[in-house]
Length: 347
Image 1 (tube, rainbow, N blue to C red):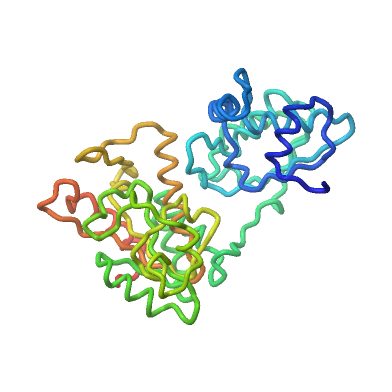
Image 2 (cartoon, rainbow, N blue to C red):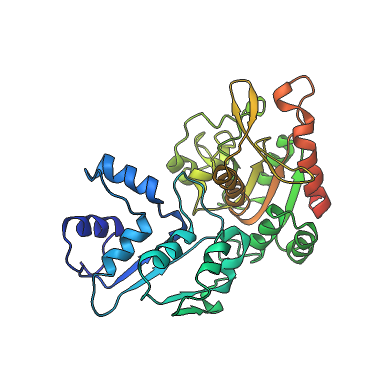
């Protein structure tokens, strides 16, 4: 075949140590490539290869490194999109090259220094390496998802990085073309979605997979939903996004989008004066998330949620309930005030 799936390519290279037919590998969503632990576990469970000790990037590079003449790997990277256990980010590709492939040439954008790529320390390590070329044409800065305003991703980056002034300035440049509202009332948000959408424009509610205390609002992230029905069925189907009953999480909507989106923000990701507080609900209480990797996954989950709308969105931060210790208003109010300070209009 002229083109084959990269997983089939991997399997072929496991069976045969000769140089592969292909000289070029194109890895979309390259930040999702697995680290050593996840790859080794997969190889042991699925491929009967118990002693595998390479990350996914390292193995794929090693396959193309078998060529004596030339090979090219193109990595398409979404900044801050790692949300699954074992996703290594672009840093693992660069670390693999640095560890075992000194002769390879690296062409990268200097924007990989930005915080959401998580590659700053790695880039410092290759600063003295030969054959490293920085080319800012490799950074695709114009969003094709939010066609009304290409700076939505930049706004979300500033918001999540807690750069209030930068977020406020970016919001000012796009709010006329790309409406974003905040509210404490889910019913108002639902009405707003229905009023904004025209014809077949699609709308729906999306939430974090950790948003386990939205049940009083009839949102249960543990209830199974079918993404096919949710994304494709018409307004008369209760399983569709239009019905505003089933909700999608970051895992359902990664790489996809709707025209109009309601993001309902739970107490799993809370604003505080010093840092985002990352929580996981277990039993009858919220527990701190302490692992930096899991904190980053949660932050990235909200990055995914806040960048799914093509034309506009409404963000719901519930008011909480003083009589419910798991939904104390103090868990929600600082987040709403932070968003209000940035300048989002209140619905």
